[in-house]
Image 1 (cartoon, helix red, strand yellow):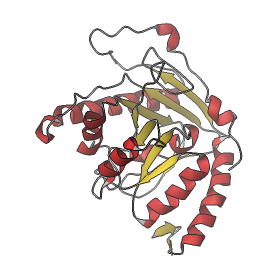
Image 2 (cartoon, one colour; image 1 turned 180 degrees about the vertical axis):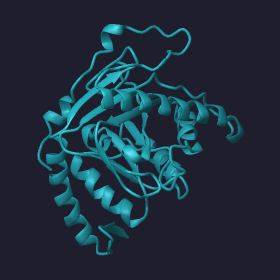
Image 3 (cartoon, helix red, strand yellow; image 1 turned 30 degrees about the vertical axis):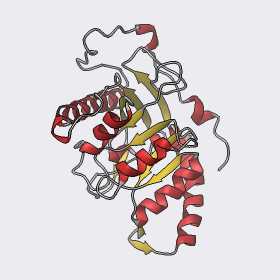
Length: 263
């Protein structure tokens, strides 16, 4: 069941109506932010770090930062995983109003299986967006489901971090961050992480750690950028043998955010 200011909501119709109201409120809220994105990669296409061509990616970000990417980077070609509980039902309706495709599931209740089924669907999303520490935590700890999915599908993982100059944090397990109006909001992404195909469960741990460390790194860079207003990679180094075009490492506004259509 969904909770709003401590009130439990069970009625599906009420949840759908609430999602409509929240979608308009969130749209207004987001347009008060000073938003910029900067990759630590060479490639940049339409606000998202992806290679040119028909590449597909698994975008990951921490659960407490869900408020920003679920709106700014919402596109019909991207599917996001939402929990099976009532809170997840509310988020599902909200994501759909933003234009995302929604897959219901969780890391503990069939989420990976749902993503794999969606991948085989010709009408499925081109990319996936996942919070690897969701839906119950522990906070900012990558679970195996994300790297398992990447290994099974061959889709590289793109860690993306977000930072806010001012925000309110909930008392939930993830300490959900809600940026205050007129805050600086910054996004930073690192190089894609390629997980070899066909790995067994005990072989995924190395990549699980790699994703977690990369996510913490880009999150720290984004938070520093948002707080002080200056960009510092904080010692980030690209993978060995990777060539980086520094001309592509400029800050970009969210083009899609400015061109969004009404829900």
